Amino acid sequence: MSAAAHAVANLVAPSPDCETLLPGHDFVDAYQVQAGLPGLRARQAADAIIKHPPGWIRQLVATRNCVVRLFRLRTVDIGVDDPHASEQTVGGFPLVTQSEREVVLGFDDRHLDFRISIRVAPDGPAATQVTVSTIVKTNNLAGRAYLATIMPFHRLIVRHLLEHARFRQHPS
Image (cartoon, rainbow, N blue to C red):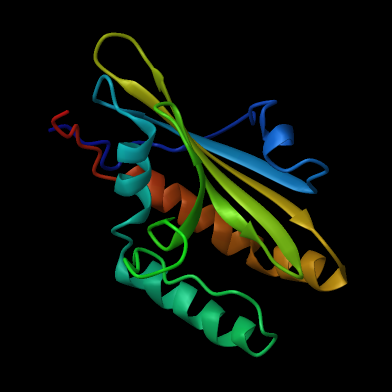
């Protein structure tokens, strides 16, 4: 077992592939951290990043859910997967696609569509680079206002989740 606890999550250039995940997007950012673990798979990284958020992030998301319910928008219980849900989720976010190197989460809603890409790439013999990209396409004025409002929280949350993820290699 190895951890990237308190590693620095750096803002990096998003992959050009982000355009294919959500064509015509209005916003994209990417943060990257080095996991001191070789051979990490994307799903392992996604689980480590999203499934165990600290209480303050759970509370921020719960507050967000209370507000957006008033507008009949979708909510996400971060870190919680409902085994009876109609769609597979990772940490509460619907799974769009999954491969060894990338997990894509997200959904489309009235105000905006978003995707979260979690990619892994070898970084020498003893580490894996983990990159989280967030891609957003706003659908109307409400989506643009929402994006502007949550952006400071988004940056703080993504960086914290990446920097405090406990990356583990599960036996195959």
